[in-house]
Amino acid sequence: MSFNYHDGVLYAEQCSVAELAAQYGTPLYVYSQQQIMNNWQQFATVWPAPHRLCYAVKANSNLAVLHLLAQLGAGFDIVSGGELARVIAAGGRADRVVFSGVAKSRAEMAEALAHGIYCFNVESAAELEQLNEVARAHQVMAPVSLRVNPDVDAQTHPYISTGLKTNKFGIAMSQARDIARRAQELPNIQLQGVDCHIGSQILTAAPFLDAADRMLALIADLRQDGIAIQHLNMGGGIGISYQHEQPLDVSAYLLELQRRAEALGGLTLMLEPGRSIVGNAGLLVTQVAYHKAGEDKDFLLVDAGMNDLMRPALYQAYHEIIPVQQSAASPLLVDVVGPVCETGDFLGLARHLSASAGDLLAVMNAGAYGFTMSSNYNTRPRAAEVMVIGDQAHLIRERETVSDLWKGERIVEVPR
Ligand SMILES: Cc1ncc(COP(=O)(O)O)c(C=O)c1O
Ligand SMILES: N[C@@H](CCCC[NH3+])C(=O)O
Image 1 (cartoon, rainbow, N blue to C red):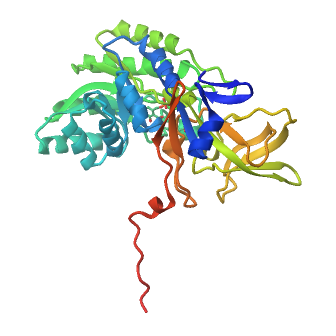
Image 2: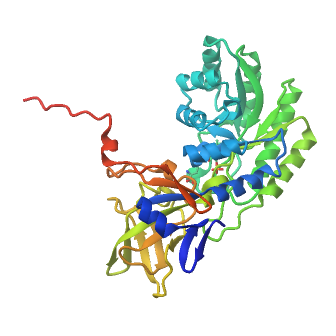
Image 3: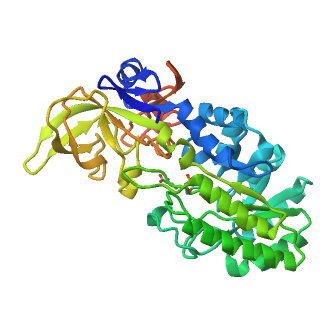
């Protein structure tokens, strides 16, 4: 791991987290470049070409993170025109981009066609028809993968489960053959593959392999219908350890996927990992503003809130919270809560910590869906982000200033 204690002080690679907080202020996101690279290699070493890894940009879309992954040879899974623009700005290759999302606009389709992306992961019959129209208007062929909903239970939090037929995502398995046939008929659609994504923070291989079997059976059916399918994209979703969970063995999963796909033959495999690439490579540093002794329990009131890290409030997600400077004082039972005016504004409940005003805490495993889900609620500027490379720290996003937050707003005079 790239975050370790030395003489009681937390380090990110060879940089003291306390010194980073002193230099850049808090709340502060700190990422380890080495950890991102290690996570990437874990996939890349067992995934020989032509198989392709498309990093899910939504997990962490900082340009420095995207640039690093582009240099490592990554493709990118995007869900908006904004994410496409980020990939391009970071030096990513458009021809390695796959475009997911249930409600792509015409403008987003046109933009992605102009850049020559690898394919659109199409999620409905209506989207397919619209994409054909947009491609025809631009006199190009639109490369397409059909995102199918395999109806498997990913056994994860209901808000991040996407592969059940009650979820909004993907084309129902029962409609996939008809829609594939329609794709063949449409003059500006080039059907290349099929994909699925069953959910996120999945800790066992079983739901993935169950989905893979269903997708492979579909590919066999489509081929029987005379429809050539060249790739199978199994999406992202590989979980990480936030508490003491045992995550699945990535290489074993990838090898088993390859083994099952080889039985069918002629398939390029793709994945869209997000969290498993950046999740454990980031932490959020926050400073304790006050210690409040309550009647029933104590609170540590800190300067990071749900607007900085939304996962605890939104999913009751657990993030380990540790002191930046270890102390010998005996820990107290506390709720670690933010400054936002919401009861759901907590980073951790019922934790054993000894910390007082001015002390720094690190919220661990915050590299994925941390900064990207942050907001300006309560007119709070978003945190700065720092990338650590060995003993060097690089400011990769400045803290917002308050006046940034009303850019574009207009005062309207009240009629007299
Ligand atoms: C279509 C798609 N692909 C990939 C991902 C990345 O998932 P994860 O970060 O769990 O790997 C997501 C998010 O859940 C997604 O919706
Ligand atoms: N945002 C979720 C992950 C899933 C999002 C993408 N489908 C999280 O923080 O865990």
